Image (cartoon, rainbow, N blue to C red; front, side, top):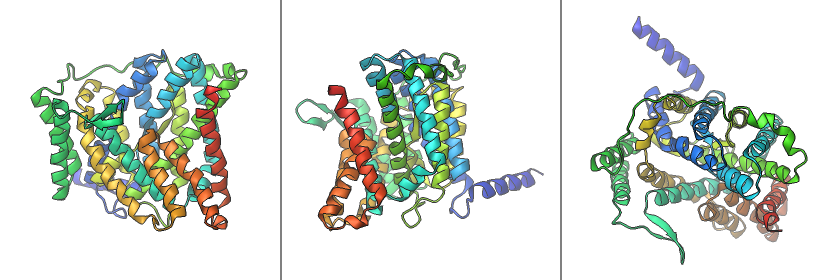
Length: 449
């Protein structure tokens, strides 16, 4: 009887996620989901910390972060069948707290109303399939550049988080201190994980993370959690606040600029990440993403729900690349991520053992894997090489995915026209040229006037 039930469950999962077609298994997808979750679990603590600086309740933010990740990841898995997890993004929360609330002096309740309005517009744009049209119009070379840029970006995050590089007043960045025990922990994890990868050991990345965590606990570099189970903090302080304060943004012109920024950044952050991860997971078909409309709809719905819960816009997480590297190929991976986020709401103290030194080796190695997409770019043609190069380089140097896309997408029409190939540039790419010029103007020029 138990065997019959197992067969029925497997049959259901097969019909829903098409595991055989993707050449994967339930076990591999669960492992991939766990790996992705562990790689991005830090957002449960970082998001409340950043948004908490605006005056919001951190306990409520913890719950809002988890719920938004659950909604986004499960929808992405079921609707689009992509192994890509969704959760509140780091860039948006920093902009919310430090630029909008603190610098502009706007109450967080009003700022959250701006996020809610942006999310509604975002959903309408997705329903009209405008986002899908834009993504399918991006040249293949730039899509590959976005993927490679993401690789360099997350590798840079890993090097920084692991202590291998650090800030420098004279040269911006410099090599970190190898006398720091936590940096040595990162190096040890990187060596072990890389060795397993070279030997093609199944689940190398996850095994490497387990090794690094255990080594940190044994040496005392990672503190043992004080508790195992804790209650779920109340969502009441932030739930629905954005909706109830929508009326406050009507007579505030600066808030409409904020709405536009949230809208544009959310649009291209997720679009760029989806393209890069789809390339890594071999989802792309003839330069296009199948079921892209469903993926964007899952992202849009999660943004609305996040605004209702009381957090800044979610995005597709580059850490999903860790699960993809382990073998995740279907939406089952994303659903598993959602399940673990639900469980984490009860066992949040255990997540404190997953430090940046544990995830750093993963991000560095996955960054190397994603950088391989650069081999498909037509580097011999300068009108393509320069925009692609700017896209790849700007992401880690500006510490912003959207800026990287902006630099490349502004340069592309200009270099193509200079090369006498203007007819090969479609109207949407010309439109994006002006959109990104406007975005850079709003972000970098207006605040100084």
